[in-house]
Length: 202
Image (cartoon, rainbow, N blue to C red; front, side, top):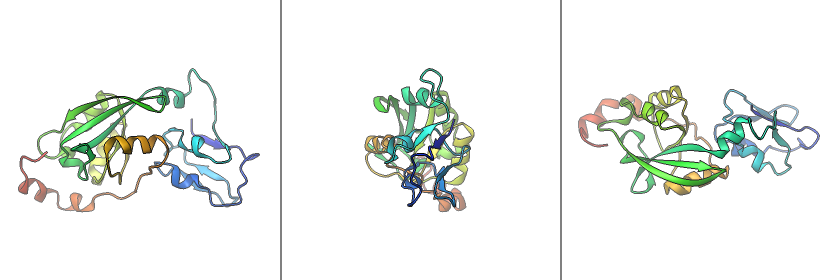
């Protein structure tokens, strides 16, 4: 269930700060000043509800037992393409994938999945991550082809991440990271040259 705004609380007289907070760009602002939530894009992460300064955001249904939001916040898995503990700028050639298990908005465990030989975007990494229960990837750069594969495996992708992997995960959970909306066009357009020059690079 996507979030909704309580119009009795929202002042709707200023630029809504939640537009920048939403990690998947699901929030826009209507002509009447109220925030508008795209139910298709919304991943029900709860960032807008936690960060709304007026506490005007809520879910359509509040059911502690069955709410999809509560289930996600109780436990979810986040994958980060990493190299040396940092977010790798190149998804397809990362050293490994660090998988963080989150419960009640806190990191409780992490595990490492070795990167497949060659380019990740041509491998079955999306399926492997899906089998592991991953539903979100926080990445640096990746092409549209890789994003589509991940999305088809029910993995939401947030691009433009940088820094220590664990810090990036924490920033996302605090609602401080949003998808850059930028794909690695050079990777899509010049795909073969990366593999020819680095045939064994992960």
